[in-house]
Image (cartoon, rainbow, N blue to C red):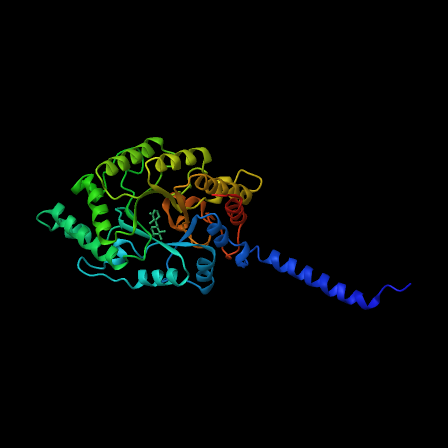
Length: 367
Ligand code: XIL
């Protein structure tokens, strides 16, 4: 019996092509995704900025740069815009590293979040500040003078280029509802340092959305209430506060979707924006589960779904590109769980289950 032999090779070639296409699709699930299925397209479709903390200056491989440009629609300088990074001395500025990042993001069509003008912890303050204040006859006046100069110079330098600024980072105590007793700004200037900083920043770039960014509020109702009350006082006083950032370093406890949703809604009820600004969720939180990577993926979906349910939740930023470059591996609180593996891409820059989970959450939502 004749079986149309002339057509068999053609069918085989078509089948082969389909099989190859399917294979290359599944290869694309890891790190080398086509734009059509990637995080950036999903983020744009959901109208949510999905960002990454990044800096281009320090031995960054081409592969990581490619990942940062391909997979995220927003960029936050991880360190290069902190006061100490920008001001080597009290009267000089060095914008080279920060400018490189800004150029990188602009070239890639990415939104930029400025981070951060005034932060008193870790590498937030310039090393020269303490001495500068010690030797001043009026330390409060000197601090104000330095703040005015810093804000005018830095916010002015990037005016029109950065969509948002974390003007103040972590004003409150780590635990509880008060101001941090170690907060240099609060010690010398009182709560009004916030109004002062916001007004200065607004004058230097009226188009930038100005945020206060806070940490460890996700599971501390008292601290969260204190942040809301503080934001309300600032708004009542007419301060140009446009948003609150919830950092989202979930290393004590996995995110609780209901609590997070409630917090996002309470911030939105103030009439200002909210973003999750520094998200990371270490794998060790799920070590008791049969499939920790799958559990981590669900936790990521919870965070994205909570934000997607609140129209004033305008962005989520991952604090790092990949698990080989997470600040948690160098942080004392999380030293016991190194490698923390808290991000969307693994050490080989391959997409983890959490990646698919957030893409799916973004695609499923009609905002
Ligand atoms: C971290 C950076 O990731 C580290 O590289 C640096 O050594 C210390 O600061 N909260 C913040 C971020 O607001 O600026 C911090 O970034 C992480 C905690």
